[in-house]
Structure formats: C-alpha cells, structure tokens
Amino acid sequence: MVQRKFAGEGEICYVAFMVKTASHTGRDASVAPQAFVLVHGAWHGGWCWRRVAEALSAAGHVVFTPTLTGLGERAHLLQPGLTIEHFATDVAKVIETEELQRVVLVGHSFAGGPISVVADRKPEALKRLIYLDALLLENGQSGFSKLDPVIVAQRLKLAQESSEGLTIPPPPPAAFGVTETHDAAWLRRRLTPQPLNSYQEPIRLNHPLGNGVKKTYIACTDPAYGPLVPTHQWAKRQNGWQYLEFASGHDAMVIRPEALTEVLVDCASEL
Image 1 (tube, one colour):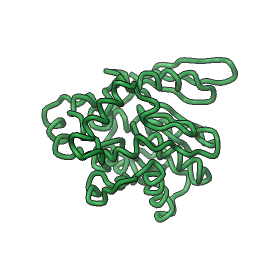
Image 2 (tube, helix red, strand yellow):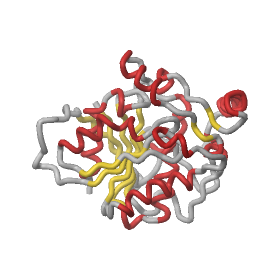
Image 3 (cartoon, helix red, strand yellow):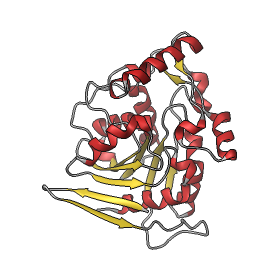
Image 4 (spheres, one colour):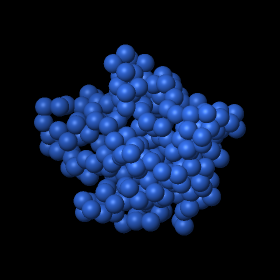
C-alpha cells in the first residue's frame, strides 16, 4: 500500500490506495507511453534499475538508466574532483543525445542532487521529477551537510583507510534494506566505491529546488533509511509537492520492482 499526500494552499489530503502488480505480458494500452530516465544513487550503477526498466519497457515506455562517471561499469573513469555537477552532466547528455522530451526524471538516494541540477539547467525537457527516497539539496548544500556528523566522520575515516581519501567504500547490502540472499549477493558483486568529493562539494542551483518542474517525493518506509528520515519530514511539509510513502527498504527498485514500477507510472500520469 502507498500513502499519498498532496500539499496545496494550506490543505493536506491523504489518500491510501493499493498498488497492483505490474504485468509483464505486454503494454497497457490505457497508459500513454512515457520517457523515463532512471538515475541510481551512491555506490550503485544503472544496473540496479534492471527489473524496473524491463517492466517499464514491456509496458511500452522509453527507458534509459545512465551510470554516473566513476561508478558501475564506468568505474574505470574514476578521478579526483568528481562532483554532483559532473553527474548532472552525465544525465543531461543522455536526455540531449537521445532527443528526449517531457522526461520523467527519477533520482534515487544521492541522485536527488544530480536530477535537481538537471532541472535547474534544462527544465523545458522535463515533465516531472521523482525523488525516490532521495537526498534533497538546496543551493550551497552538500551531501555531507545533510547527514549526521557521526555518519560523516565514519565515511571520512573509511575513505582515508581504503583509498587515501579518494572514495567511500560501499556499505553492506543490508544497509539499503536488501536482505534476500540472491539480491544481496548481486549487490555485493556490483556495488562500487563512491567518489568522496561528490559528497563534499556543494551543489550550485540558480533557481529554487526543482525550477518549476512538478515534483514527487517517494519515501521508503519499511524500514526507513535512517540518514534520510529528516529529508522525508522536510519533503512532507512542502507545498505543491506530491508526497508518497512506499512500503519498502531503501533499494526499492531491487526489493519491490513491480510495485515500484506501478507507482512510477502512476506518478508520471499525474497532470
């Protein structure tokens, strides 16, 4: 079950509805095809969206799952100084090169920053921003500025010990709510170190967060990812945002891909 909140002119309305299981047998003719760009979070790569991307494609949607520089299959491009701006360029270039329009841009976890930068620079290409259990940064904030100082100190220590400060080693799969044996093994094989500087360098936005693009925040709540609970609370208070609570651990695209696919399509269809 997903809980929805629509925030508007001083009024908040909650609606609960059941999420149906996505069909993999063919396209749902009742839903207009959408263009989805799905962006992974820290330590992950485009690979983590495989199940959701397959379900969206089977339903007739256009789907791209770019991997950010220095991560996943692009780990060989790791270099000092990588920032959220570099990651936003990765995403923007996919939209530009593929000549996509009215894009539903989805950012998971750390990718909340890069998709916000894309909206700040090129809002005309976007239909909706969907922040999936994502970090929300305003101008001048960094990933570390939104985390508990104890967590920051731990990550700095791990980065120094593992790579002399270049990268943060990935946490175990359970940290992302992934406990099923085969899925956990998949993550252990595929997770790659996160460039440390991407958490340290502040984001630069020239406009308010989202730059006028419609925004949805999906908070994963079963269990909630501890470092993001304050962000959930902030997102819930924002007027003009669509706020949903989704019964999944942090890596919802791995844990409940079919249900998540249905929620993404539903959000994309909102006027």
